[in-house]
Amino acid sequence: MKNQMISKTTLQIFKEGLAKFVTFSDAEWIELTPYLMASSIKKKDHFVVHGKVCKHVGFVIKGSLRFYHVKDGAEITGYFCFENEFVSSYKSYLKQEPSLTCIQAMEDTELILIAYEDMQQLLAHPKLAFKMEQFGRLIAEYYICCYEDRITAFIVQSPEERYLTMLENQAGLLLRIPQHYVANFLGITPVSLSRIRKRTLRGPVTS
Amino acid sequence: MKNQMISKTTLQIFKEGLAKFVTFSDAEWIELTPYLMASSIKKKDHFVVHGKVCKHVGFVIKGSLRFYHVKDGAEITGYFCFENEFVSSYKSYLKQEPSLTCIQAMEDTELILIAYEDMQQLLAHPKLAFKMEQFGRLIAEYYICCYEDRITAFIVQSPEERYLTMLENQAGLLLRIPQHYVANFLGITPVSLSRIRKRTLRGPVTS
DNA sequence: TTTTGGTTTTGATCTACGTCAAAGGTAAGC
DNA sequence: GCTTACCTTTGACGTAGATCAAAACCAAAA
Image (tube, rainbow over all chains, first blue to last red; front, side, top):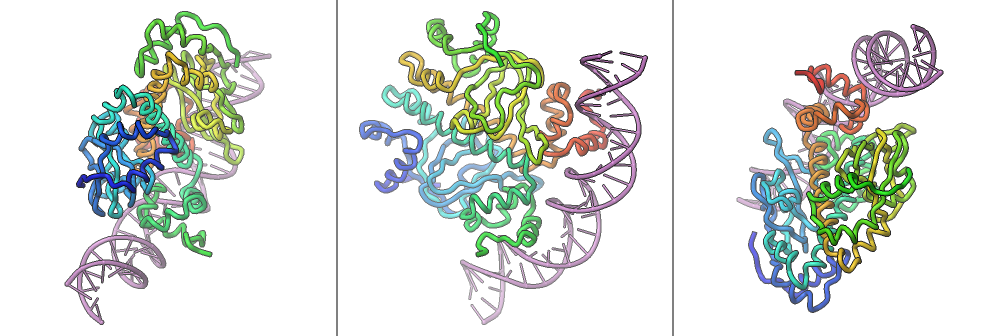
C-alpha cells in the first residue's frame, strides 16, 4: 500500500461519491483536501489485517476488496466493496481497536484515504466540523440500512432464497466475484452454492 | 401508545443514557426538552407495524420490545431492545419509508420519543444542531458496531456456536426473553434451540 | 504447447436443523 | 381448584447443507 498525490480526476470521482451525502463548497474543498491521501493496493495485498488497528477509512476509486475472517485456518469472506463505496474495518476504525476482519484487494485498487487522526482533526476543524459530523452521521446511517437488510436476510431467508434475491438485485456483482466468496457471503459453502445454482437452473448470465 | 408529561426521574434516566454519547449543558437541556415526549406501550401493543412509516426514535426507560418479521403467516423475531437502549425501525425512520419489521412491547414499556420532524428541527436548531449531529453520528456508529458483530456471527458461526456465545455474553437476556424468540434471533427454530440446549447441557442458569 | 494454481462441479455420505405432531409444563384467568 | 393459553420438550422422519475426495475446468505462466 503506497501513497501518492491525488490526481484531478480522482478527486473529481471522490467529490461525486460524497455528493450522495454532503456537498462541500469550493472553499471547503480547499480546506479538506490536505487531509486526503491517494493510495493504491495491489491485488491480494491487504488494506487491514486481523489483529491490527484499522487506521483509515477509504473511498474506492477503482477496484474491489473483500472482507474475510479466518476460522480454523480457513478464510471466510463476509463482505465486499466496489467503486464509489467506503471501506474500513468499521468497528476497528471507530474504536481504534484490533480488527477481527482482514480486508484484501480482489483487484488492483485505488483509494482515497482519511487517517483516523486526521478525521478527528476534521471533526474539530473550525470551518469543517459541522459538515464532517453530518457527513459521518449520514454515512453511518447509510450502513445501518445496509446491515439491517443483511441481518434480516439471515433471519428470514434460506440460503437458497438469499442467493436468488442476490441474483435479482445484484446480478452484476455475481459476475465480478469468485463464486466461493459469494458462497461465504451467503453463509454457505462453495459446494452448496454450486448445487443451489444447479438445482435452481439460474446462473448469473442465463438468458 | 399514549403520550404524557415527562417525569423528573424519567428525564434523569434519559440524561444518563445519553451521556454515553454526548453531554448537554443545562442550558442545552432546556432547549432540548420541548422536543421530547414520554410515552407508554402496553405489553403486546406495537411501537410500529409492518407497512407503516416509523415516525419516532424511542429511548427505553423501562420494559422491553422485540422486532419481528412476518413470513408465511408466522412471526420471526430478529432483535430485542431493553432499558437504556434506543429503539426504532431504523431504515424506515431514517428514510421515512414503510417499515418491513414490526416492533412490539414484550412487557409494559415506558419510552421517551423524538418524532422525525422534531429531529429534523433539532438538526437545524441554531444552538443544538452541532451536538445533535454528533449525537446522531455516534448512535449510528454504535449500531454499526453491533450489527457488524451480528453479521459476523451468521457468517462464521454455527447456530450452536451462536447460542453458546450468547450464553457467555448475554446470559441475562436469555432469562428475560421467551426461548422461541431467542431461537429466531439465532436464526433457527424453537425446536432446534431446545435440542441444542439439551445436547450442550447448558441452560442459562445451570451452575 | 504444456504446466500450474486456483476454481467449480460432481459424487457419496453424514448430520444438523427443519417439519409435523403429540405430550408435558407453567402461569394467568376464571 | 380447574381451565385456558402458551411455551417447551420429545419423538419420528425428511431434507438442505456440510464434509471429504475426485474430477473437470479455466486461465495465466512457462
